[in-house]
Image (cartoon, rainbow, N blue to C red; front, side, top):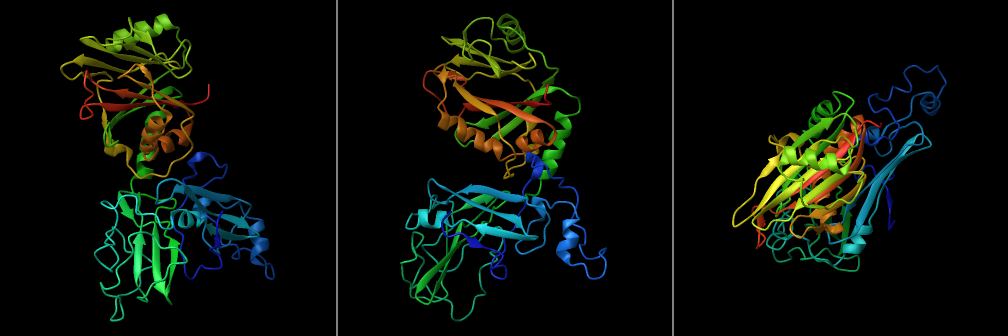
Length: 418
């Protein structure tokens, strides 16, 4: 960790906000709050002694310099604003106090690197004023007569420690991180005494997004009404990776052989009786049957855990196929967005229904990252476990690939342990 700073020492200057969604199973009950450590102690007993008798602190109670109980550690990583790399930040309960650190590795890794997306990020080339954002920056000072003018604009790339500046008080923001439906600068730099002083904003450090908790609880209530296995089926736009909708297929645990899986797929989706078995014999996740289209073909998928059909769709020549199963979908808005990821997907893999082969790990990871930013994983891990995820590139048409009609299909299996 490069140039980590103890926030406990800098609490008057920096404020780390956000909390961890403890649904990932950190073993700590996050529904209670820290009692007043001094209210019930006998005269002469200090705060630390009282805290030692209290229950352990949780991650959503962390705050630089605040009192805490136990040895809990709360850290997470987030991508750097430049291409590649990541930064870790968080707090740990040490000797009855929260000690927090911000990893500056992104600043050094990205020093001199242009903003990743100049079009969607803050415009720093045309104005010396801080960019507009959904929330005002806590670090931005008031505007006054001494503010710099356009004769000394912000640099196009994040400055390094060795770079000089001439307009004292000039504030420039770089990079972008998005959460809760809004985007914020990743790095803020101020010209002071002829040199740049920069820090990571951590604007999306453990975001507590409005709607994520409600979406998580609502989906979890659906998933765990009964002790069943389930598949959360998520549709995403092929080009933008925007979530288009989702549905849940749930049933009792019960494995099936290939013949039974083919019959189930054919009956529900219209495909499966013929064609290739892409998933291989005896899969632990899903049976994937692919009927390569000449003029007409498609795919049928059956859960290996429940024996239920979870997806089907046609692929046709000179036209656009249709999803044949499931037949109803819930809106994407029900899953929220910008949610803090909890737990993981388990084992993952993917199949390209354009070529009939395997998807690259890069494609699988990119698609799953979008699903991980919704309430799907928090809901699954709130009541049980995520076992695996299968990603499908569903083209709808044969011949020249049409990204405007193609979709990504994600099948996330989960449930109670058998």
